[in-house]
Length: 124
Image: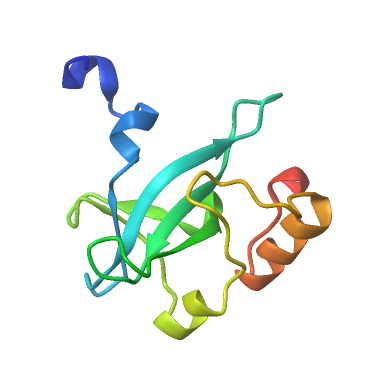
């Protein structure tokens, strides 16, 4: 692994520094952690984070694809912030830990963006 200077600048951060980062609610309560980032090949834009949620010691854990635009980094929490309830997450479209979903296509992406009330990345 490289030093912090090669993995992070004022505005940029390497993906390996994002993976494993906590996801919290605006009040600081823990929700889960980022397992991986999904990047659009053509533009290089991060479009989703695959987040783990629930379970105990990895047992019973669920994985959810979260539109990147719904997360914001909060330096004071050293975490990404997502304003959703546990019930909203449990009802969200699940995915695999790898971010692969058998129905992964534009229709599925539209469903995920509607669920999280996020503007689709292809519309920005």
